[in-house]
Image (tube, rainbow, N blue to C red; front, side, top):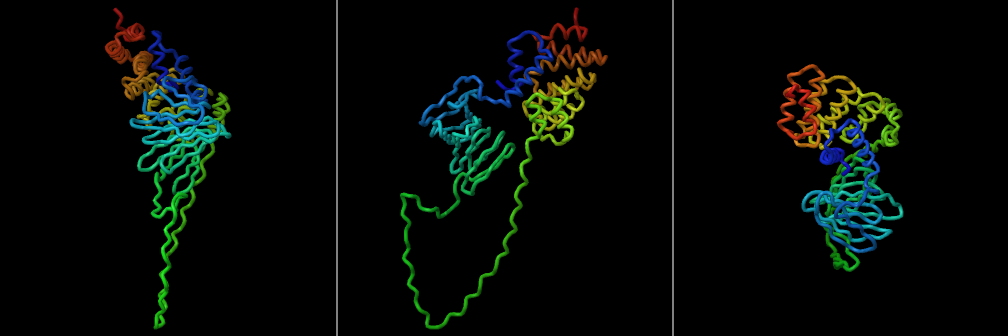
Length: 377
């Protein structure tokens, strides 16, 4: 369970005490480290299948937490209902997985001595160590989440890097394919020329067609920002200096990268610069499951570090609105009442307290929120 929202839900389920700031920070930090280290050292989850030696196996859709695990630590996971993967070869030197239908997410342990190949129709994806998604339909869509892959299709070969997403033809459109080794080409008899008694007039030359201008090649993919490497090493002061020089506008519009940049700003002692980054997640990626976490974190920054309780109350209200039944909804409602109390708005604090007690009569904050709202007998 690497997602921070899921881990917060699990912690709430197994403990009766309120979640402290340390709990939230610790879970976020550990989840982000796990995303970078990934699942290479994760304990096997239910339904994991380890493959050793050559052979073939078909893996059909199972619960979402089930993964197909190979002997070297690489994993494959089905994406969506009706998806199906088939392992056609698995050995120390070569692993081949076919996407029969639907889509699969692959996380491949780096091993230059082993070829890891994913096949979808006539499209093949070769990797050394990376994470990517292959979706097969009328066309094959390849999305690289980390690392580098090489895709071969009937139209040629393309190299994709982190953040790239391309669509490839699943079948060849060649109407006259070359004969296979088991086929013999049919030879048509050559026509016999018949002499013409009259000299033929010279045939007019065909009109010359203008050669269309070649399309400019796409610009090279930007290198990974230096600040992210520093953040990976937990060197947040250096990461912040590098991020400030590059500018906050240089952060890509991806929830994970925006949250990571916000953490660099917070943990290097610059909480005010984390605010616009977190607001971008809640505004531009409201349907992403991490949006609630971003709004909750924004509320904490505004309340505890910037001393803006009224603005913090709005952020916690946003966290509840993004996922009313999410794992942070209860804590967000308690924090909202706490913010209004600190802002001196007793009426709003009492209103949120009554809402909390009606929604979570056995909630872990019920005694504290009754005191905040002045509802104690």
